Structure formats: C-alpha cells, structure tokens
Picture (spheres, rainbow, N blue to C red):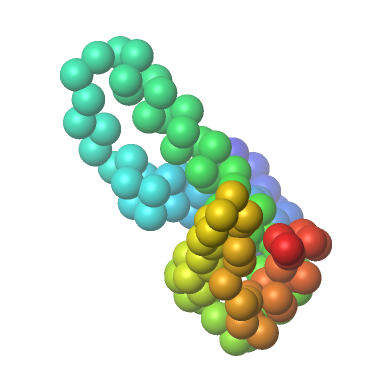
Length: 118
C-alpha cells in the first residue's frame, strides 16, 4: 500500500494509524498476558481471547482518558491501576464502609467522569 503514496503527510498519517494498531496488538499480547494462550480446548482459547479483547478495549479507553486529561504528566497507567487497587471497603454490621480515599484517587475518579462511591 505504501508504494503508491507520493505525499509525505499522507505517508506519516498511514504510518501512525498502523502504529496504533500494532501497539494495540502488542498490548494485548504482552501486557494482558496473551502472548501464549496455553489452553487445552477450543472453548478455553476463545474465552481467553474474548476476555483479552475486552481488556484491550478497557485499557485503550483508559489510555485515551489519561491522554485527554493529561494524567500521564503525573503518573503511568501502572501507577494509576496501583493507586485504584488500594481502594478498600469493609462490611460491618451489614453496612459497607469505604476506607478514606486519597486526593489522587479522587482526581482519577474525576478525570474518568465517575462519581466516587460513598
């Protein structure tokens, strides 16, 4: 396809579009643990790939929000996930109690347009 392109701007646009797709596949293979499927049945393989694509969609959305909200200036995606993993709740006498949220966790909720749990 690139052999027929004479405009440099068009070539760069095509290259960047291709790069996005390649990075998505790299992310699904390596970051999401789908580089080797290691399953024993067709159904298990299909299920694992399906979950991998759902995870890719979620991580791509997170990446887009982080870019738009300029969260990458203060944290990586791994740091964002680790920060949110620290959220804890406890059930006492049938009531769910949320441990106090940090300022950073509130900022993440706000950036994603999600109302923090009460």
